[in-house]
Amino acid sequence: MGLWSRMKLLFRAKASSALDRAEDPRQVLDYAYSQQQQLLVTLRKGLVEVATSKQQLELQEKKLEARVPQLDDQARRAVSAGREDLARIALERKRTAMAEMQSLHTQVAEVEADKQRLSAQERALQLRIEQFRTHRDVVSARYSAAEAEVRVKESLAGVSGELAELGMAVGRAEEKADRLQARARAIDSLIDVGALPSASGGDFVEAELLRITAGSEIDEELARIRSEVEWPKLAGSTEEKKG
Image 1 (cartoon, rainbow, N blue to C red):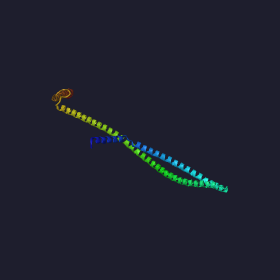
Image 2 (cartoon, rainbow, N blue to C red; image 1 turned 135 degrees about the vertical axis):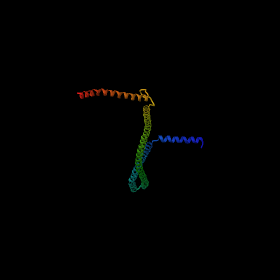
Image 3 (cartoon, rainbow, N blue to C red; image 1 turned 90 degrees about the vertical axis):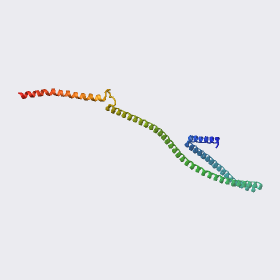
Image 4 (cartoon, rainbow, N blue to C red; image 1 turned 90 degrees about the horizontal axis):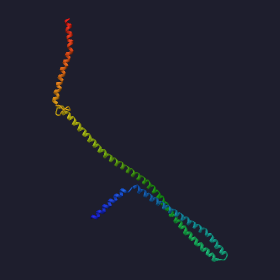
């Protein structure tokens, strides 16, 4: 396949895809329904014209049928008057009228057959249009529902993507918080073992020694106070024994 052929094929494919996206099945169905309605209107007009033609032919047939007795009467009166030439003319007219009557009768039968055929076609077309309208409504409803479903799913897909990104952000935040907490605990542990200076800036060993010294001083002061409190009691009990 040459370059030009491939370009034409690609163009037709893209054009077909664009037309498919632009084409709304509901509009196509509505157009088809309107065309069928117009066809039904045209068929009914034809049916009215055929019925009118039949009535005109029947009227002409009745006129000729009414003229035949008149021509018979003219022929009899002409013979009675001794005018066979006039009687012959009247009989020729009668013969022509009867031939026309026969032709009109045949035409009326043919027009009646056309009328019956058009009536049957009109009923069939009307039924087909009713069926097509039901089918159009069903297809249009299905297309509208599918279109709405696609829009909802596309919206949900966009929301899902945003939620996924938010979930990842929350996960990263939780992971960062966990790392910070772990680091804080590690720093506390290092401070406890003296690997890092405390908040007061002293050494861990020095702090422990100060704590022990402070405890000893408190114990000594407590013993001194206890002795001062208990000494009067001991002195009083000694004097009582002497007395």
